[in-house]
Length: 140
Image 1 (cartoon, rainbow, N blue to C red):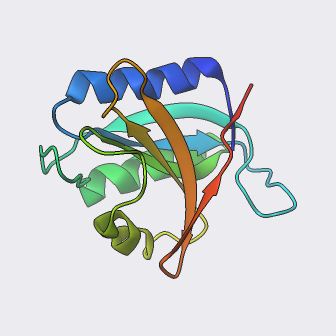
Image 2: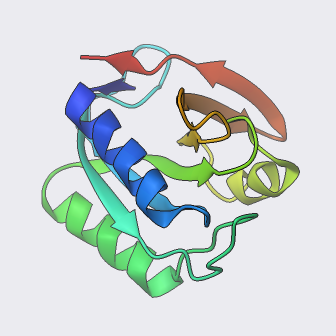
């Protein structure tokens, strides 16, 4: 996914604001896709409420999520990524993340890692049938 520095800053700010709990949200993208099927350019970050209010996992209310996706599509964009933070571990999908991703094929999973508070990391993954593959976040 191509993403601006300002949108990456929004992800990081959200993660820091919610710490020590995980944050979560979604990223809207332009509808064009690359040759490998990855999402187009990110257009907006949509914060969601982590209803689990936990440092170990995130949960999003289904009605909130559906409402955001409907609004994104009404604007002519599409859901390109789900993001969340890991406040105590590296930004790599946990088994819980991998299991959750099974319901969202083709989406990127962006994880903000805050374990190194002075040097947070933001990474993105494609998760397909339990297989995790890191993909580049192309900063614009």
